[in-house]
Amino acid sequence: MKIYNARYLDNNQRFIAAIITGFIAAVIFGNLYGLITAFLHIEFSLMFIAIGYGIAATIKHFGRGVHTRFMVVGAIMTFIAIFIGDLTSSISINGVIVLFTSGNLSVIATTFLSYLRIFASLNPYALISLAFRLIGIYVGYTQSVIL
Image 1 (cartoon, rainbow, N blue to C red):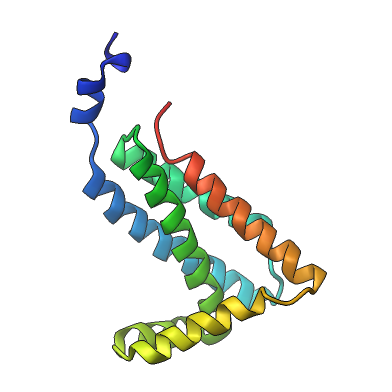
Image 2: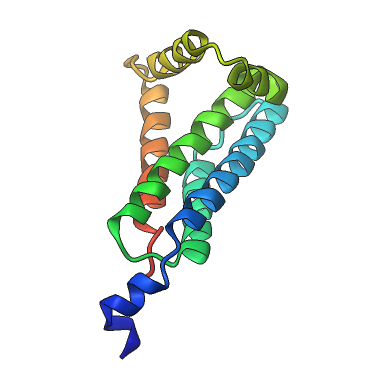
């Protein structure tokens, strides 16, 4: 059977296509989540799981991969989508574009560290929100490969 032939599977993998389409999906899903959250002023924790699944489905469709590297791309792109979504909900799309196109790495690093400090508190709501984010990343990791 062709599905168990490793050479056939390696020939049909498109790793670069998976990275490019995964990044495009991460930007789209992240901005969509950020706009919905900013408009309604409510955080939907289940959307993190949907973001992970949407990015994984995109990587699975365009990448057609079976190796662990596709799973890692799915997890990284899901994290990027969640990060972009949180930034978009707090500082708007224009603010995110200005932040990343400024080229000032210290401002980007400071923004990232302040983002991580939000989840360092022992607030139960922050821990639940962090858990849903991690579940979304896990879904993006596990669902990014064929099989």
